[in-house]
Length: 204
Image (cartoon, rainbow, N blue to C red; front, top):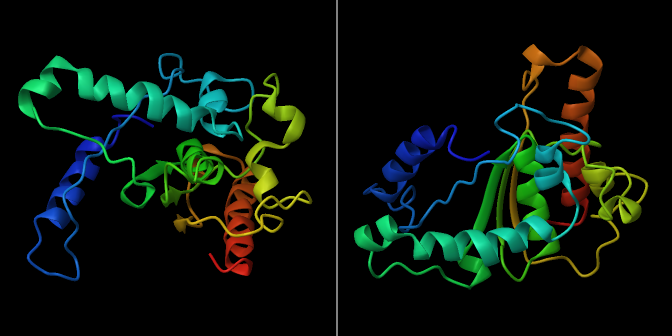
């Protein structure tokens, strides 16, 4: 969800890349955070711009990041001045996606629908429920949005062979509990558990 918590994430990443402990040290890398288009009015869920961008089951968002956002970062004058030799790898082993809530659904979909671009996926409290914008053509193929990863359609289970992805999926019992009713909160957690189970059954 863009730059919202990027300061906290940046500190964590800096600590890991600067660590002297070889078991905790990460190689240097670049984090690019993209704000969703509906942040001005805070809209979310079915029919929203945020739902369109993040919850749509296709490679649309992944292509947007790869063909528009990353080239725009490289072309940015301030970035060029600070990092004149900056390059992004095209090797999917060196690229990943990260997100929370609808951003978590987007993170999985980026790898799932474009495994030639992204192999590392981190998703927190992903909206593996029906939050897709139903006016979009993808809804014809996947009418229940990210719920289809674990629905009767069994998108994960029926994928053969496995995609070359490494996935970290996390959900907690009290995630989003303050602003959601008990039933929707239960579905949220259950959807993550079902997605995790489907991935585990396929040996991801």
